[in-house]
Length: 143
Image 1 (cartoon, rainbow, N blue to C red):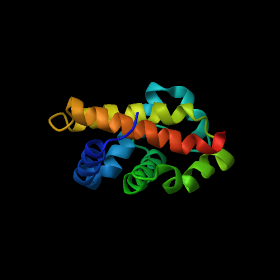
Image 2 (cartoon, helix red, strand yellow; image 1 turned 120 degrees about the vertical axis):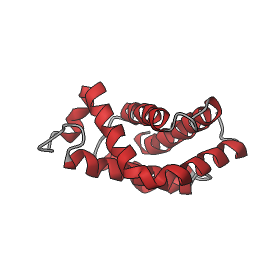
Image 3 (spheres, rainbow, N blue to C red; image 1 turned 90 degrees about the vertical axis):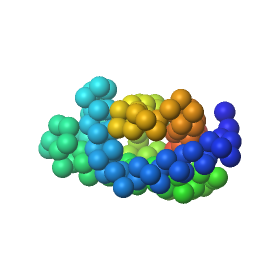
Image 4 (cartoon, rainbow, N blue to C red; image 1 turned 90 degrees about the horizontal axis):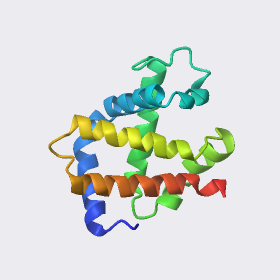
């Protein structure tokens, strides 16, 4: 499952369009993940408030979207471009790599809901392939 030049262009163009709303998207993505997949709360047990839209959720959603932005910038070399994030999640945070897929599934749901006209099957496929590659790059240090 490689990203074609067309896939990369679709991802970059879509990210350029939606990035001004990245904080809002990140908040909704993380809020949805915590509610729909309550087992993910264990990684955030140090937060005082895990409710959707709380300051902690918003702040971490912003960090997640910064990571997505970094991935878009490094779309041609995700492994090296996301090396520091991968090491952080593997060695310091010790996040189960399965959670990357959970997070990105929720991200796709939020994108489909917020941008129904733009998020057609072709873009959905490109974003899904891209996010799968991002999850793989973030999981590389677990091996």
